Length: 418
Image 1 (tube, rainbow, N blue to C red):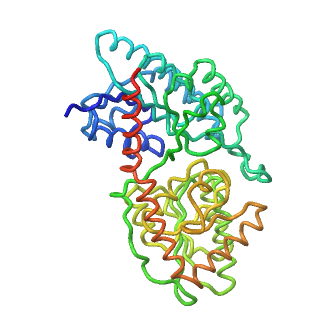
Image 2: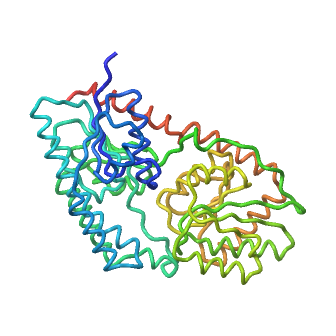
């Protein structure tokens, strides 16, 4: 049977290159098994893709002459603001899109055709696209954007707030002017907040699909190392950047509170960032130097092993748009604990862990410590939450499930015709 021809647009795409790049990679590496896929991506991804030996039909768009100097200029202007650097660097997405449009239009004039165009990265409506003008039925997403700021925590997340945020607003405006949503047959959105960012006239075209997924072959279910208890150590994991918005300081204080009540707790921290030294010093000052271990950045296999070696994953992030690490922990059959805002609110509930309210810092620490104490007091209940978490991942968030769902949309669109 002849395979359907899919044009996959992934500005970020590469195995092991980061969260959004991993999203692009997962779509490409899995779709190509069942479809005739042509990938369009940035030339900076070429080395990673060539190592994968999956490069039969890849179109590389070279805007590095603009992207490289732009990134270095942004780092010079904002050496301590990752968010500002990201916003400035994202201007290259627009040039990439325009360059891709002209390359693909030339190929179409030579008689090359595709049945569906699917743009999977970037994952925001603030990155407009002119590719809908190619007259190939287009799917956008899954998208995850539009998340605001949690009320009452502006001081804690000020480092994530940039004076350049109006640049993002200009991206949304350009999206409307260019007609990105108008030209899309389907718009995949990760949550209601993102759907609300879609112009009202095109919201009926929205289909819910989480932008993140889990590779079940990388994150496998494993039993708890043992049942924690009053005399047995509760092992916890935190995975994320060590920046203020991730809220690791709340978890450190919660561990200190449990320790003062006589419980034995061990926290493994995977990730790096500007606050590592400060938070290590905080742990030392609280007498937790042996209980809280900072491992720095770990590879995907190392993260999976770390999760499988612990009892629960805790992500007390104040502003988390996605939360892929929560899905990975759930795939390892680990219960998860997070705050009730943004992406975690879409995937965490009492069946798979605990979603804690966000009133103030002291309340977060109290709720974290009481929740962790409940794991020690009711380990069977929390082990069951981990089992349910794995089932939910298999049913809703595994990459094979997401790709199959996308395949159904392809069939619908192809059946609709141009």
